[in-house]
Length: 363
Image (cartoon, rainbow, N blue to C red; front, side):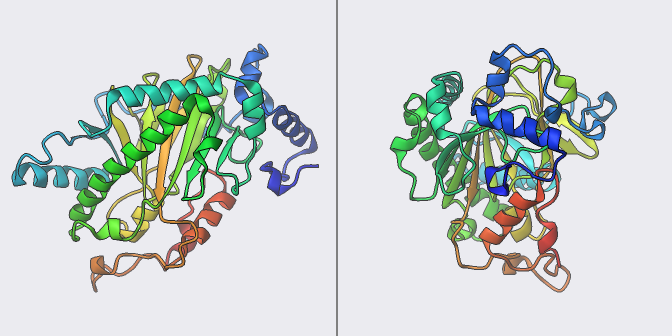
């Protein structure tokens, strides 16, 4: 019988529970199903009808996530202020943006995508040894954070950079690329946090001083082609458990964000990094910046590769977080109570992917 520590929800009918357990015991993930030649997806991947995409909900292709060009950031004061204003508007109205002309070389982005693809399509024994949902393990491979009766059509390699990860635990096929990419993302994050601080009307080092990039949770997703994509999702609708998330995606597409009641496709741009506001930044900004619901469609094409890097404080941080006091006033009172990061992470894990983890912290 499965237990909660297995990452399988035990609140399931016995037949579904047995199917979930059998699937998980293969340690081969969704790719293993595809490799077996299935033509019908297992029942536990079928999503409720109300969560599946509807053509009437899709925004016209002319509606696109804001693109912010960092190329002129050091040109002059006017260019800097313009970028800050664009970032402020995107963080408030959209919660998502695409960064171009950042400092991460295109060759490195391509190397990361290729390395992740080679891992997921590589040695089955390597993946089997890493298969786990144990948060103590800093490098692990699994299909779905928790296996539910409506599972997502994807497999994931997770790396938790919190100061204790041993790089030699990362699979050799993608180790160098992931380590170089992590360092490059942290450099971009320094610039982004400076700009976000300015956009909030705070000193440029304010967010950086909160140590809100001390822990980096990197999840390298592999979405195999799906024989019945109309019945499932690559990733269910959710918001991110982070201050900020950086996403590297390949050219296949499939990411959608919910904007003004419509789902907007986040079209891949070569060399771009998708950036979105996470729950924790919405909370400390007292809702000035928005953490927006998003999802990934399943597709008959594939595989789709993406690498999301969630930036957070240390999960063991003992300092309480809450709305930044410099942003508060009689006309802008706090909307959230103070909390420990670990309490938020536990709330996020326990709630299931589609529910809001901010609700328990609202005043």
